[in-house]
Image (cartoon, rainbow, N blue to C red; front, top):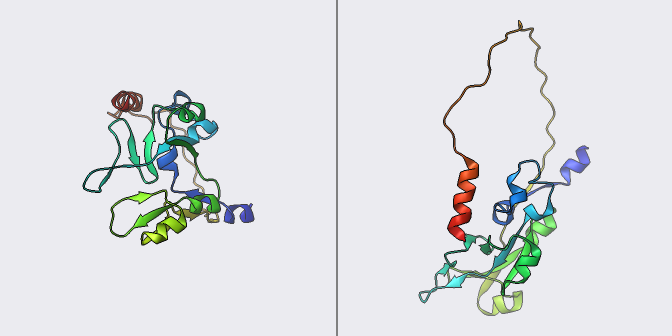
Length: 174
């Protein structure tokens, strides 16, 4: 188990690529089991006349580009011109392979290939960071006998209704 731990980790692409709005992904149990939840429909940034990157109002701006949360599956994404279905990275190599061309004179990163990027004085950089797992040993602590107590450990407090929040976001981008 320790060796498996050292060869695993997480990629920071999860927040960009996770499919927040798919009905299957709103269930906490299936969020990490269903492959549809670990993908998103991604396209290039638009560029304003002043050279600033932006996403059209129905798209969500992320590090990798503009995410179209109205296309909730690879099949639906294939129907959207200029967009590609991307999935979360599971290995360090996959994570670091997601590179974009960063040009010094521009605020925007693009999908230019390496030769085209360097010809424009750009630099290919990984968009995401890999965080390796680390093995942590358990910390023993002395046990203490407690008398049985039949009182409530829960209490009612105000909180966010995440279902309403997800619905509001879904309606805002459609």
